[in-house]
Amino acid sequence: MSIYRLGHVEVRVPDLELASAYYTEVLGLIEVARQGNSVYLKGWDEHDHHSVILTYAPRYGIEHIAWKCDNVDDLQLYETKLEKYGCHVERIPAGEELAMGDGIRFETPSGHHMELYHEMEKVGNGLPKLNPPPVRDDLIGIAPPRLDHTLLLAENVGDAGHFMKEALDFRMTEQLVNGEGHQLIVFLERSHTPHDVAFATGTDGGLHHIAFHLDNWIEVGNAADTLTMNGIEIDIGPTRHGLTRGHTIYFFDPCGNRNEVFSGGYYVDPDFEPITWTEDQFGKALFFYEGKINEQFVNRHT
Ligand SMILES: [Fe+2]
Image (cartoon, rainbow, N blue to C red):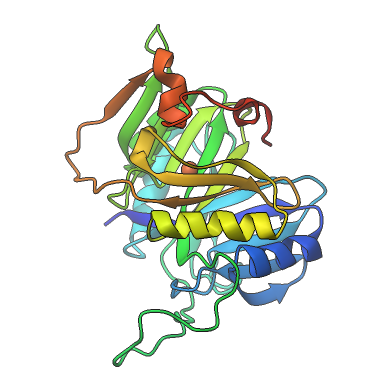
């Protein structure tokens, strides 16, 4: 009984039409629904109704992050744990959020709005369950199969990680520490991957990026072609992270939210012993080939 993966993220966009055109035609997510000021999207191989919500807001950034639980009883379990931790928890009745069942909502000590839920309407991945082909033939753009993880910002990364571990049972996979042993970046997982969420030092409530899974390094190269041919601003890459070992490109949606495509990583057992990077290796930890961070890594975010 627990959280098993990142379910969905709600991203703020100052121009909903521009953003939805980019997310469907260049990134290649599939538009599932529109309601009010929001557009609901999914990766092609996801079965749930949506994994990304774009919502109109004057300023870009992250509105909420939602985690999927194994069992509906997990909501009560985590409500108790969160309240014990000092969080105010609100119940979300089924149907309040489009296609979503019962949930709980709370604010983390790092100022992020998070939700837990168990049920979401299934729309399928467009492939038959009997003798399916391996891929759809109507995909456009980069077309990642699914949402992978998010990197959030926190003034106190140690506290942010502690909360995820103690209140929500996340496991730490990697950390980057300064000379005094304080965490500057921390990576946490529930899905046996290097990370479902990470926190880097920055403004509370901030977003560094949302990342989409690609199957391999060739797909990352193809994504770079697609981004370049569409005139999308690339932040860095294609390259490789030291942290997580992932192959990556960072780039920006037309509203300023940083996106990532991510492939690789490694399998994480529940008893995995965390990896530590030291601040003198900061550059290689972030971008293994370049060995240094670009100015935008720390200066451009929400
Ligand atoms: Fe990432």
